Length: 268
Image (cartoon, rainbow, N blue to C red; front, side, top):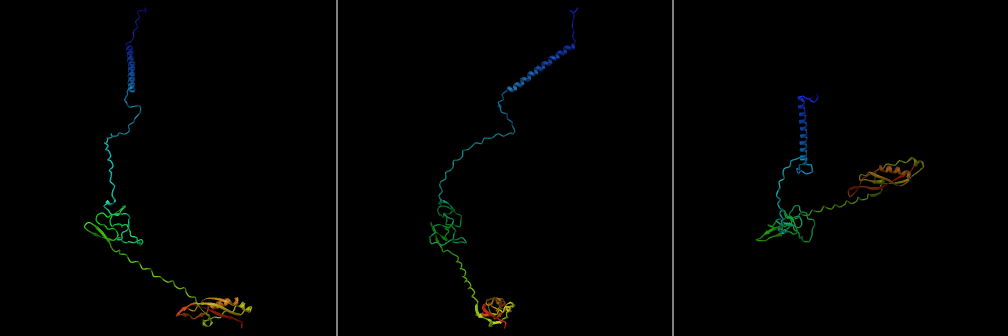
């Protein structure tokens, strides 16, 4: 009964199985292709090297410039100091024609150097004057000949030396005032001194000499008691300062004089 059993499948099941087959086959083929591409990339040799490079700026190609060999240094012949087109001087010495000219001193030894000319010049080991005569700097005037240029010295015009200032004599020291001795009788006004009460109480009497200095007008400018009792000196000096005298003349010129005024103190 079961030997002749036939199992029949629906038509849709066969189509589904085919679809699954093609899908799996496509996935396998795609995986193999992708693997082959990746392997070919890593296996390829691009001769880039093992270092990584990053290009950040485009650089123009460098054009090679042909190099020319440097010229060998030219050997210059040693220059002759006398072949310069400018005058040569060993020292830079001032010319007598320059104004102002102030000589530093006077010497009897002749000078072997030449002064600087009025034009441009060089400093060198020898003194030369190439070309036309430019002047030797010694106040010389050129004399031109057929083949020789010479110079003759001419007199140097110097300013006269200033006259020395006049010597002023120091004024003579003033002469000491003339002493006239006792001058009581020469006084125009001779006030009496006050008798100190203290001196009267102890009965002090006596003479007091006062040295005075009288100016040109006859006024007493100083008074100093030189003798007498000490209790009477101050009153005598005060009276002497108030005294007046006539001016004293010496060669018709009023002068200062000294003298002594005598005061007598008594209770009588």
